Length: 134
Image 1 (cartoon, rainbow, N blue to C red):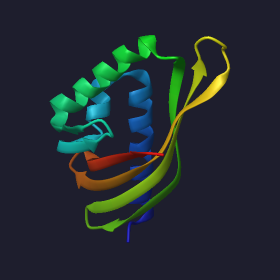
Image 2: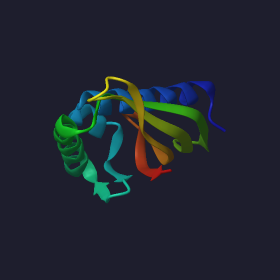
Image 3: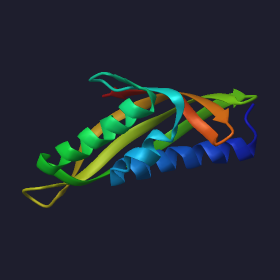
């Protein structure tokens, strides 16, 4: 069973992941993963720090022509279990934004994350993260 400190550290990791992706901060987003971390995106699997950083750079570039701006990632129903430096996690995801043409708020994506986490010297990191879009 995860103790309260580990639980809070992992919640902080989820928050940093969201902050970094929303800001287009490729280095800090990649640092939420282990060095050999995997991100299973519906389009493809990104493996290792270089591919993870490239994903954010490409995503950020594509946002300049996206129908929605000011995108923000939000998580709810975070469920965690584990012990001794490893954990499994899951949460619901919603990405909100503002419609570029109307200026009205919109939902960009709904989905779930399924995670394998590992505690390293640098703290908790995603070993594998799978995005399932609903």
